[in-house]
Image (cartoon, rainbow, N blue to C red; front, side, top):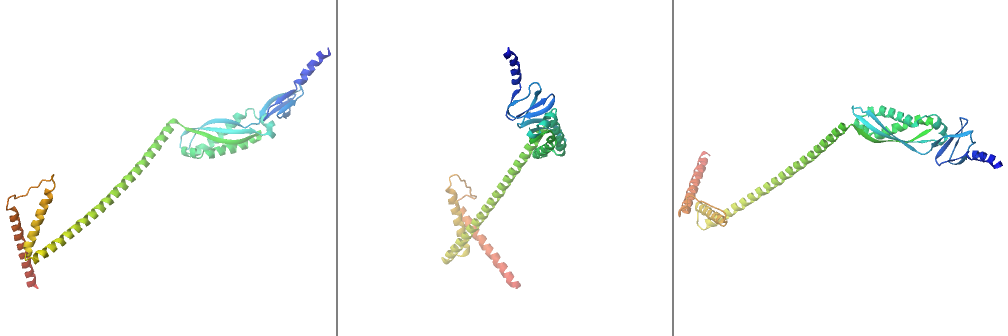
Length: 303
């Protein structure tokens, strides 16, 4: 009979034992009033009188919030904010009793900071200065949540999503800018090619002209030597010039005739053509000499 009476007492005592997991704090109230917070391990409370009213995690938690706001250039954009926070061990009481819903409180602060910072920036600056936005959120949250026992570990702007039409327009602008740069590079390449080609052509013409000049100089030197030889042989200048011309004429015919694909028509084309051409050349040279002599005499008479 004694065991029957002791059994309920033993069971009642056993209900006073409880286990608290690692990185967790158990909040115990005695008759509705906060008594103590218990850390990890095997713990005991007075049965019936004491009660575990809640457990608080000391692990770092993350809250993701999507905020819609408008930029300075009137573009609506969605920002995804990730906030990492942790309850401070020495402020578990405040964290448990002061805030009914900490997630809602943090979310409200995030909305307030983002909608105060982003409207000061144009859309491009939002992408560039997202670290500044995150630091502003972290700074404001840390100051506000510290009184409630929460420490803000990190705030991140993990995504920036403008309106779909704005993204399409931005892509078109980017594509147009890249096409403009490509066209500029292509134009520069064409300009360089034209300049270099002109330089090469100018150099080619210069060398070609120098070659022609050298060729004519050598021809003149050869003609001069030929004239001296013919004069020593008793042939006067007019006849020597005619002979050289007719010789060059036949050399030209021989050169043209060596090419099977060339055609040549000479007018007049008769047996006496060469002789007639020679006579005409001699007559022309004699007439030219007479004109030169007459002109020279007139100049001497004037003097």
